Length: 353
Image (tube, rainbow, N blue to C red; front, side, top):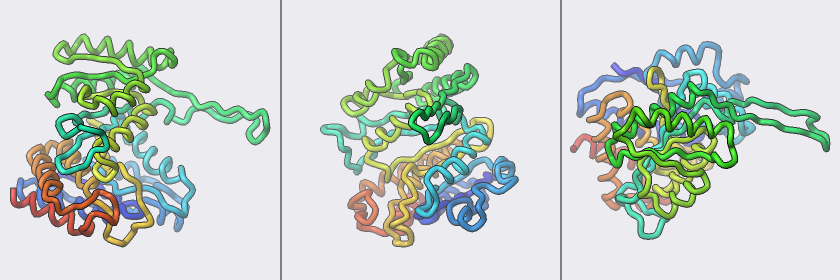
């Protein structure tokens, strides 16, 4: 029995989560696994009503679940940063979700903004360290609000944190069994302390994986090559900040936020899965938001939970939906179908296959 905590969140989050759960139910019926869900109201509305982001005991309760399915966090009446730090970052850190896993895959039927590139060219995965670096929040202000103000934010990188991320990336690359090529993305020519640690750790661990080809590229070069030659990449491993940047670039080359999903992974504990796009509050309740990224998050969740057959069914159903020609665009309000109709179609294809 898989226990799944559901955090629909803000804006259009509840709408896309509803469609994801619809597809999850279809996959469970076809492949025969059992799951149960419990919904939590963490988000902007709760914060505005109570002043709290996560109530006391929330993290410990969520720790009892194998997975968290998240819709979106972000409310127009809440100052940016409050919900993101109080919910998203806190869950990532407190649940030790030290891997951010971001597939960058162009599906058939999805328009790619890159000239002459198709699904055979855009199929890579970014493994981003998720609990260290600049996101630790180490630093502070001196003389704040004066002309002499100083702001310091430090990137915290530990050998243990870097090594477990690098090892996960090597293992993932081996299991993915595609090109078996792992690229380290860094900036060793400028960030000569933190990224020296990353490079040394990467090279030392690589000795234990002779079947994996290794490569290195500066982050600025990665940004260029993702656009010019995405087919060069199989799996990329990088730190928290650079991972945050290059995965958004990855989302665009795979067709946009409407199809991009991500996982915050604790291989030994509770992992969290979400669509990459935001809460899109202006579309709330209009049944026009694209749910495919949230459905892709379900596919990732199934794969991580070990339900690989169900995960393949969901991915195949997504491909069939995209190839059907019924979805005119991945942009909200331009799909030619309602949010619920897209979810119904994917669920139907899951049951048919």
